[in-house]
Length: 323
Ligand code: BTN
Image (cartoon, rainbow, N blue to C red):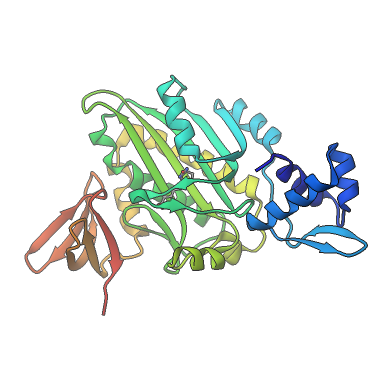
């Protein structure tokens, strides 16, 4: 896809209607290029309407990030900030940067992430303007084993921030899905490197749906929601900044106290705390029991007829109990 595609959409964000000819003149390209860009926009899920005699118009306003304002604020707070209009994956980008020595608190955000990755090898979908996709590189003095509860701590930090933005019903589902009324709002992908005894590097990726939850539900075949469905119009830049600041503070707390410092709050935020749940293991085994909390490393404690069992997040997924 050409980069003209995003420039055309930016133009259409400023004007109510704009003719193909007008946009082509502004961007210094041909009328045919604009036609192609509009087709690409529609294919990418951004509806552009063409009205005879008036030109093109966005069906819904697009919510853009403001890279220069974000860079000013984040760089003055000490982050190394990378903004991309379009990027396959912010996590993949930062993993590569980390290997090349990128510093602690390097942050990458994509206006549009085209090959987002989720946990357990899944994809993370978000069309242009409909989500937030960003990753933070965190260099930790803790060993990789001590970071096993990090993803749960990040879940708590996100829930606390969302509640602060007015989303009182947000909760976490072990290990770190963010839910609202049983539907997925956000996910966290943490990728660690480092040896067992030494300092570690974590790339912490966060994907949050801002709009388009219904079409995502259809695309992924599970209940998905978005922030605007609960809060009305949201400011994408403000939500991004609130999440980054909260993560930065929370991760510093994790560095001091490990997951133990978050455990009680995590249990209080767990959507299934003291509920009967099914745990599905990698071997397709289904184990039912009561979720009775997590331990200091973030493992799920499940009370079963044969005693309390402990599950680590790489191995299993959790469901509300089947009836
Ligand atoms: C999940 O729930 O499966 C985790 C989803 C994590 C998605 C985020 S979006 C930003 C970062 N870059 C990626 O490729 N994935 C994470």
